[in-house]
Length: 400
Image: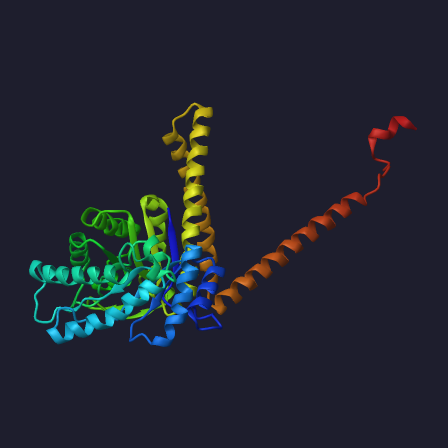
């Protein structure tokens, strides 16, 4: 399963703060992607480093992505919508220069619109225009000479417009809304932000089955096997995300997601971006847990193969062998629990109880030692007796 992990921005541990230096550090860490944050107006003097990043990305197959403005108002007034689109224009230009595979965007508040098919249709029409603009920025066939400095423009597909799920009840962007719109607008893909989905669903993602349900829903509605996701810990309340946190401090755990990817994710081509405040540190944390999940899966498969082999050699079925192994495991578990209870009981005793028991043990020890000494003394006394020849002893009369 192709899996790419990386941070949302230049790594915190990167001494240099340029994108190219960040890419170098990410590669050294064993990660394979990053997401450039162009959440505010892009400054012209940054375009040189963007171009260098694009060249490096094109030559090394390093996956680059761009995040547009965090705050969008595509469902607002005409003025608010145009302001949002002008900000997105800068992100589209950066996406072309860095050879970005995805440009992430937010739709924004519902405003005066009500959730439903009509609102989704309006969002779809707006995003269709954004997709057309991205294609026009990437140029037309036959214009290779005009883009000699950007060879990927005609060798790669244009940047995909990635629509992110939202984490607030007042914002457009439920899983159902995003999947429906992306299904109807070619050139768009859903961004499954797990922290937002978890928060908006009041703690929805807890087990691997929850992730399986989510991706089955995405596959049934949107289709395909390529997914772009964000992951971070999140503080949430009443169905609204408050802020991102490191994964260890959140009730949104990565372990169930890693378990799902290891067991059922072979059909997927997935990119996971770390939105955590720890950026690359939590990205590495996710890599480690995914590797552990893969290792556990291999161990389970090896155990099942061994069980089948032993069952065939013993002439019993696999279920009977599994039952016996389960009984042995239960016996070991009960033994461990019994030892644990003894330890807990010992630790729960008060100092006075411990003193009394120590005194009793000492008295018992002294009594045992006295008993042993008495037996030893009696034995010595018996061994010290001598044979006597009394005159009245008739046994020896005949000898003299």
